Amino acid sequence: MTKKLLTNALLINEGERKEVDLLIHEGRIEKIGSSLSDPTADVLDLGGRILIPGAIDDQVHFREPGLTQKANIYTESRAAVAGGVTSFMEMPNTKPPAVTQEKLEEKYQIGAHSSLANYSFFMGASNDNIEEVLKTDPRNVCGVKIFMGSSTGNMLVDNTKTLEGIFSQCPMLIALHCEDEHTIRSNTQIAIDQYGEDIPFTEHPIIRSHEACFLSSSQAVAMAKKFGTRIHVLHISTADELELFDNSIPLSQKKITAEVCVHHLSFTAEDYLSLGSKVKCNPAIKYLHDREALWAGLNDNRLDVVATDHAPHTIEEKSGKYLTAPSGLPLVQHSLQLMMMHVRDGRISMERMIEKMCHAPADLFSIEGRGYVREGYWADLVVVNPDESVVVQPDNILYKCGWSPLEGTNFQQTIEHTFISGHHAYNKGVFDESVLGQRLLFKA
Image 1: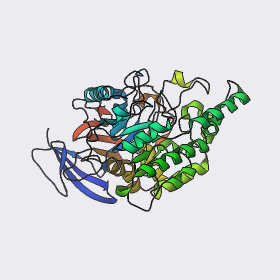
Image 2 (image 1 turned 60 degrees about the vertical axis):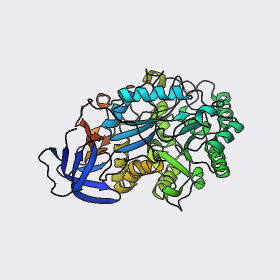
Image 3 (image 1 turned 180 degrees about the vertical axis):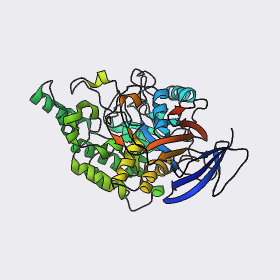
Image 4 (image 1 turned 90 degrees about the vertical axis):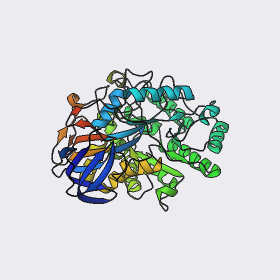
């Protein structure tokens, strides 16, 4: 691999800003300094543009295998790279689901042959596959996923003995979707009794309620404390749940961590009036006071990482009524720009945003050699032009589903370049697909 020299960069990394040059050799960062030179290197003068680590998204649904009318690993990883997401961790609720080691490895083979970004895939738990779960290798698999509330697919784990068995025996990180199924079913029936088939989308945060979230999350946290389990609670959406998470200790010492998603930070329940099914997701987008609490929790470290839960569906599927329109929205191409918009609006600092989208996911999952701009680390890098705007519209959306709930949004910054393990994968709208992403590895 040819050496690359990035010059005149404004590096924002590990809470600091500094003007640097950066030399890449054999996919890794060889040198960070000033006035660097190397006659054998290809030079890219960044002209003072912002250089940051690549974002790491710990929760995406790329729909392959079995649901490829919506998306696939190639199309969605391509969108991720264009948005500055250099690594992703994908969920097991495909068809067939990744609930055996064989089916999990089949997904890794698809990733190896088609992913432009670095990748990992969660092992899925079910009510009857604990033996398969316990075979998972923590060295090269990001974690185990448990749906403690049904979302998409048929992977609900609602057997208490099964949950206790996994929590008490699994030595690796368990990622959790927490919503209480009984509460949701009861609330759904109440809505059907009131509205019949014409349930308005504004009922979604009432059906998938605060109570449903808190009941399940609190059960998971209590069980983790009982068994000393390492858990990561995904897509926190309510103010109530924040009391379950600790900010008195550093991330490296936490056994119970939490994620917040960009849509829960960006929308409120009022957006169901204009966007309807396009912002229908599980757990539901809640109310203004919840969104404000999530921002507070992110900034004070009760919430540890920011992700997308990227979950594309076709626009035809989304055009159905409430009970038939599936939950989920595509976000991975625009998550970094969306968070930079929040930086501009004073919600979060650029340094803290990078911590939550780049550094913290690497630390939380113990990813080897990624998440930071450091000498010796893989060169997963993103160049941001802070002075060029772009409007999200159908002709620049790269998801296979072809739509976004952010259509019409005018972002004030663009992603100009993305490097994946030193490979210049994205260059001002042009992809170089000659080198694919790598399988993520995790420290013991």
